[in-house]
Length: 193
Image (tube, rainbow, N blue to C red; front, side):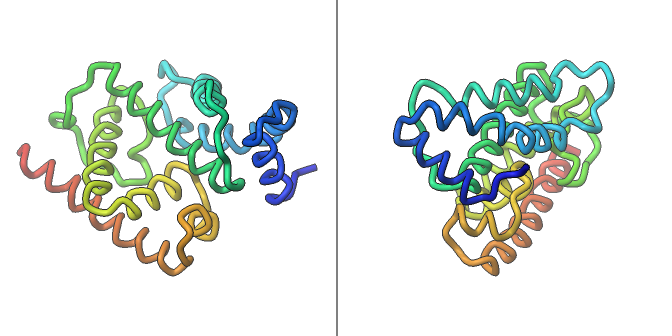
């Protein structure tokens, strides 16, 4: 039986207030969604890839339940932070593999495929992370929309709730951010040619 979003929110708030039992009760319930998020990133990986779904979930879990008690607002906030954590893990993994900063002669990939960390695509993950960082310096909210929607898999409504803006604002930011990132990533490729 799946919990309603408000029930997950209640457990998150209780955990934020120091209730370790709420955290212990919550984690098995959100594990499936965390697994879905991790699979989304890694489902097209080559068989020999060194970062597996379970490892990504466990690393994200360890960072989410770190030494400080988090102050969760709701379910969408939790999964938004989980998306951000997974993004950083993937980028750290790509960088640790020693890939070139901008991908050298790597081919362009669509935004929907850029989060896959394989020997051929790790440079694109790093380039996407750098482009998102540049977007954040220009417009933090648009960067967060991409992070929440793309990496977190949050709906328009959930993203709007996390950012405390309207759904129409999220739609507009999502559209503009994708265009900006495409231009940024295409510009990097042209500059290197």
